[in-house]
Structures are given as structure tokens and as C-alpha cells.
Amino acid sequence: MEKMQYEDQLRLLERGEPGEILDLLLKLSQKRPHDLLFFNYYKEVPISSAAEVLYLFGDTLICRSNPTQTRALKASRYTIIRSPKLEHDVYASATYDAATDEIILSEFSYVELLPDRRNTLRVKIGGLFQVPVEAGTTTFTAKLKDLSLGGCALEVPEKALLGNFTYFHLNLSFTLQGQSTPQKLRVMARLLRFESDAQPCRCIMLFEHDRRSEDLIGRYIAQRQAEIIRELKD
Image (cartoon, rainbow, N blue to C red):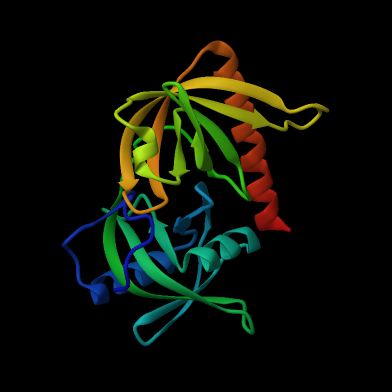
């Protein structure tokens, strides 16, 4: 099986043979109505829709879903299959045939979908979102990569810029719908961990909110989530 996507959120379970999983999925799909669902992340936003199983072809399962789920699945090249009747979620590699509008699933494995360590919805940030970071008396610019109400992922030019500090101030500027001027925000953040030491390095920060920062970031996340879902539907 190819390397899993979102490895920090999926744990492979060493149980079940691929053929057995395929037989079980086919059996569940033949019940009317069945409750098989596809689950994917698209730009960190969870997308889930009903799975329509068409037929078995060799060691692959041929399916369809709605256009929104199909676009999320095409971008991910995998999907998670869920049902209350499954003891564990099922991971499957996925390809899409545009000529037939069919989803081809293969390489089935049982997985455990781990809870997001931030326990809040996160969204991927598009474009170049630059954030001035205050480290003591020094300020440098990082790139905002994804955002949740609890914290964010930053891409920092060099790890050394963070020095030995644990706490930083991040200067964010959001353009919210219905407002003519950007909302500027200075929020304290604590360094949680490094996800990459390469240049540029990627680090995770946790916010130390006040009421205003929590409100503005929450509103921006909701706006960004709506943008991502519209992108899938368009």
C-alpha cells in the first residue's frame, strides 16, 4: 500500500485481510438501505457523503458519490469508508475515471482515525499569508499554513529565528466578509512542537486567547471553511 495521507490522523491496524475487507464491504453494500459513507479531508476540512457501490471488479470496488465528495476524494487519492456495522474504519486507495464518473477503490486496510490533537476544526490557508512573529525584541516573518481556533502551523525561514523562546506574539490580519478594512490582531502563542527541522521549518503554535482574538479567529475559520466547501462544489 502506498504511503498514507494524513499519517498524523490515521493509524494502520494490523488485522484483517484485504480480500476479507472487500467481501465485507460488498455484503454491506447489498443491504437496502445501506449506511456506507466516504470520509475525506479537503484542505483540512472533513467531508463525508454516502457511498454508492456499483460492482466488484477483480480486487477493486467500483463506486460513485456526489460531486463534492468525488472532488475531495480525487484530491486525496484515498478515502475512509465508515459504517456503524464496521468494527473499524476502512482505508482504501482511490482513483477516479472521468469517462465513467466512477471511483475505483483498492488496497483495503483497517485503520483508526485519530482525533485531531487540537480538538477543533482546522483549515488550510491558501495563498501567501504572512505573519510577523515577535520573538523577544526580534521580529521576523513566517507563513501561515493552517489555522484552528486552538493554534496554527507556521512555516519559519530558519529554526534559529525562534531562539530559545517558548512564547511569541503573532500579528495576524484578516479580511472578513462585510468589513471594508482588515481586522488586525496581536495574539500570544506558545510553541508546541516542530514538525520539520528543514529550511524552512514547520512548527505548531498554541494560542493564548483573549475574547477578541478568539472571536476574530473563529469568524475567519468559519469564513475559510465556507470558501473551501464552495471551491469543492463549483
